[in-house]
Image 1: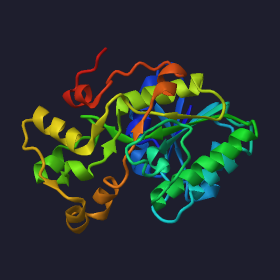
Image 2: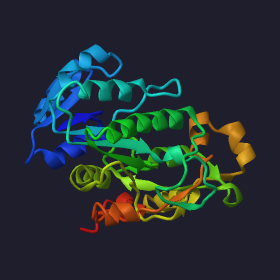
Image 3: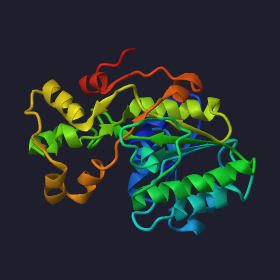
Length: 289
């Protein structure tokens, strides 16, 4: 098993696989070698921005998990392009699972959507993810690997760095008033890791899956829930016009798209039972099993 992009979720995936598989991980940092080795992960030095450094990845794994983000600039993903090109040099992996983003759907104005929804990226970040998906779809159509694309919304967990809204609540960052608010989707990092592993074994060829829990909340409702659980003040409400003046662009970008994602494929095809069916269980740290 090769993990490309072995951050928080990648480490959780590795933890699920350690007992049954040899786990390799690509890293560009010599400072992470000891950390990965301590977790029974074999590190491979290489950099997705330097394609020649990736040659050692050719033929090393029968399964690949690709969680590496695209570059921060541009509207394409040369990193994914470099990865698929090197994997094609020798015997390709039998399966490849890619962690994409629900942002590729764009603003759906609060509608319920499934994986057949037409893509409508509206930010450079989302365009880069669409480009990555296109590279992997082309790879899958060649019949070289069974490719699954996971469309992932907001990832959270109590033990994930920046994985809860606690700091934002402590700062008193405002949220949109009800008339302007957007629907938001979430997945607990542990459930995402479990879905990733199941996709490797159970995912159909060239299949896209929404990976989100059962929550049906607007963003302000999510923040109020977290505030109440942690006995913090609920965030103030402001209009969208105020938000555009007061909030940083990144924060505002997450308030500009509204959608509710169906997760039937996740449950039906991967047969995943969510340990955290909603953010209430996740924010309380109380899995249902």
